[in-house]
Length: 410
Image 1 (spheres, rainbow, N blue to C red):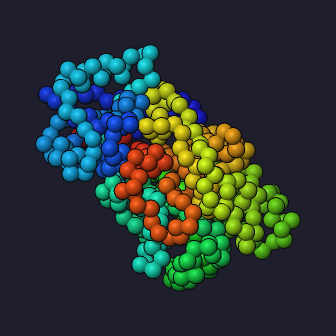
Image 2: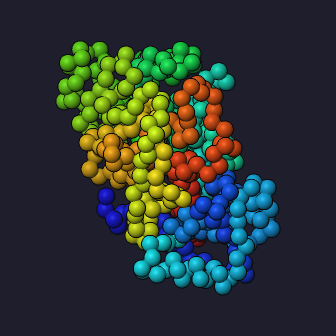
Image 3: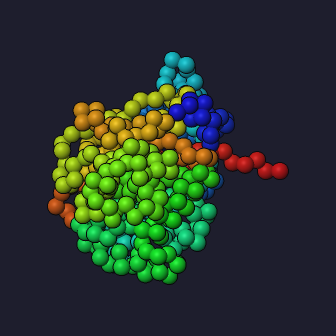
């Protein structure tokens, strides 16, 4: 990853105007509700109020000009805030500007248009998708789109798209552990026929390619759980009927085109009856928590703005959580991918980032940062986890497109 690329695209150090007062939303341990704080930031951006994201300052705090509206929203949503004077703002800016301090500021101005890729039927809508849960909790608006909308080029209307535990290889039975898997696959067969595809694998490959094109054209992709693994498997297969081969033939990696993938290379795939798509997934598959933690890397807030933004948190250790794809093999990650978080003891990767063309993507392994075994499809109640560091990483990505400069008016 070239450092100059990380510090030029879409991000810039904030220049704060002379405000009479400001509202500081601290994001350290003093914050009562970290997750809803992101919703406040998004809300103010909707009102065309710029917000400055203070990287590494009190856990990645937010600063905006004082307004009764902002103060009221903080009170209504239970978000901790401080009204600070111009002198206090200047003291913070001086601290951020010091070369000896690993801090910086990013001006947020743009309201990102958000889409979540998910089945839309009331019978199979994924109510346990962690991103849907946290967007709802933080009161950040989004649209749900699926295969037909992407086939019809709906991605052009959005800045940011999320994928969760989707199977982009389109193989039946892969998600048989889910209660809705049969209904979901039958619905996909109907969609494939309606849109003129020979089968579900052909449909899913085309959707994967359209998502890749969306990123290359300047979009932001955030993928979790099996979607982060299966999209690369599908792209490497590139329509090959590889699942009809023998087990020995399937492990012939010469049949896979790794140049087409986002993150992984040199992996081998698993048979359709396996719970895993490939040997990319090296984490536990039984949804049992290990009691272990993975660690976030530390970056220069002044020179590596993007990774520093994506790893903002009030802690640098996060409790392990599992999923259909729990962790990524470090040995199979492409060399130009930037690792953001890993379990060093197990030597697996949990969080990574890179760019593709004009856009960016982040892969985050696991299903639900606050999930626990035995819950089935009951959604996590985020009222019980308002300070979740694992969910904060998701919301860092949601705000990432907001740091894009506005085009100058002519």
